[in-house]
Image (cartoon, rainbow, N blue to C red; front, side, top):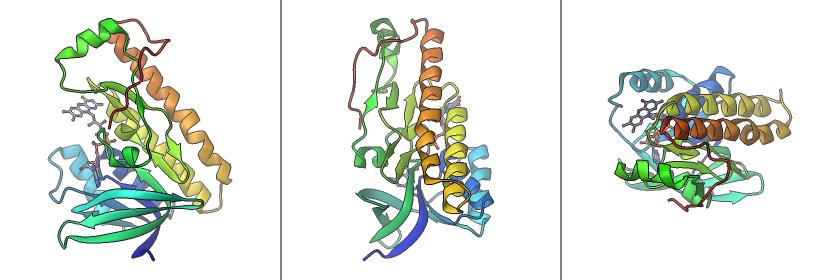
Amino acid sequence: MPDFRTRVLVVGAGQSGCVLALELARNGVPCVLLERASRPPGRPELAVLRAAARDHPLIDLREGWTFTGLRLEADRTVATVIDRGTRARHVVEAEYLAGCDGGQSTVRRSLDVVLEDALPVDVSRLLEATPWDGALGIARTYRRGTSFLVGESAHRFHPPSRSAELSVRDAADLGAKLAAVLTGRGEIGLLDSYEGERRPCAVLEREALIRALGGPASGHPTQDHVNT
Ligand SMILES: Cc1cc2nc3c(=O)[nH]c(=O)nc-3n(C[C@H](O)[C@H](O)[C@H](O)COP(=O)(O)OP(=O)(O)OC[C@H]3O[C@@H](n4cnc5c(N)ncnc54)[C@H](O)[C@@H]3O)c2cc1C
């Protein structure tokens, strides 16, 4: 038995998670928004977004709560989360789950989705100085069942370049689609278009980044990494 149920469980209250939660709320759809950090964010633009999410009556923001794993069922996602304040473990049943938990995404790992790198060798050398593994990785798929990857959990670029803009657009796109489906204004098939519309944008952004770094655009991926 779940400890509680929600229409949408949003994991991570960074830019992507806050924008997604606010888009759902703007369309009358409630959600639970989990954030493992208990302190307010340092970056001013994120602090504003987080405050807007905290103040919205349809957003149940839980700071200091960590997502630890999930189980996909035919028509829902069942997640396990830990409230660091009480150390209690909770089971949450969600009609949909959005992984907005950043480049090291636990949601992506739980869904067993690999990040594909497409690094031509010379660009790979350019990036040697960075501490990032999988510096230009894009998730092979943005969706499994009723769970989705959004923002940096779906594409992890270093240097980050226009990553924030890409992430916010992912979140607004998925938020609008989930809201349409959950309020009966859209067919369930609408959700299939999320990956088809957003993943190519990440691929284009990666190609622009590679060109900016002095390498050729990557028509042919040279290696697949499994980055967790
Ligand atoms: C140093 C640095 C510089 C950057 N500079 C630029 C720039 O110049 N231009 C640009 O466009 N972008 C830049 N970015 C990237 C930009 O910040 C991100 O693209 C943007 O914030 C969107 O990220 P996100 O919300 O998808 O993920 P994040 O911002 O990483 O947010 C993820 C959130 O999920 C939370 N979380 C993680 N795991 C869990 C869990 N298990 N349970 C609950 N919560 C969890 C995290 O605490 C975090 O709040 C930069 C990033 C960094 C780190």
